[in-house]
Image 1: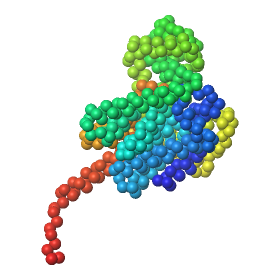
Image 2: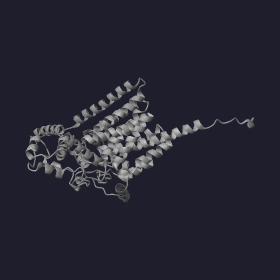
Image 3: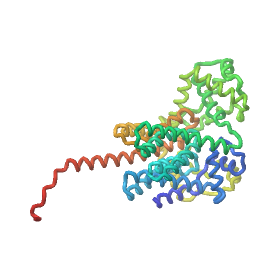
Length: 445
């Protein structure tokens, strides 16, 4: 486990960052703190920066928690040595490793969820309390992190009480809602300036996509639907929306994602935000099939179906631009090992199905059905958590980032290992049952 963990650190050192993470670090240092990035994540990153500047402390945090969580989960079914070998292999599995090398909120969430699940299944009260605390943090570092919690809380509650299913369901519901609410309170308390993220991203993405898939509409009809929204183009609006709509077109960058936002004000006023909310509701109610078509198109891109290509399956940037590097005083270059490892991972992306998210989604559904049939609560909780989280992305996602599916992939891989273990134990028990009884050795008398 130690060797595998060090290998991850050597590949990822000092922690890769794309443009969004670079901006988050600048915001942490210079302020004001907005909710465009998770304020909770920025809060503990700011504390870690007191000791070591840059992304390396965050890399240590997410990789160590994730590695320990994998080992502890497998330890509930395996001996120490086998658990260590298996968790090390999972940690080095490319679709799990490459997002974990980036200082992303998605990698942080996966680490908190894995370690939190391992802790809530333990007996000591302090471990269970620590697990719940990690669930709160996981819910706070992603806007939809709470979607991963219900079944994880249920499996924890089932080990805490013997009063029956209703009691376990009640505890799980209280834990889930409590974690989500607590994370919301902390994020609100740490926010210094609202970023209005939903209005600037998902809302206008849904407006553009729904109008694009709606029946032909005149400019007058669209302007009536979007009354109050500041538009930078008021002629041939539906055509402009469809030309800039990126989903379902197969190639990233043609057209560029977020090009549709060029038609809207980048910093909407309060009146504009209210109009966007009103238009969003009106369009969904008036053209539900167009809205579902739009959401399905984005979801297919996210899953990597057909010719869709997900974003940044292998990210190895140290920041988003030279200006960012200078702003955060971050000067690094890739080692020989990092360059060649990155090339190998990108080859896997292009020539194998390892980075096709729909493969893991299908397997996760199969594993979930197996868990229901066998009544395996741990596999049921993991697969159900991964599927619920992925379904929540179908509602709110606005880009096909590979990192969004990291939790689904992790749950699927861990569940696969647990199922193999269960099948092995079943076969071993069947052989022992079918074996004829041994006759006594009378000659030894």
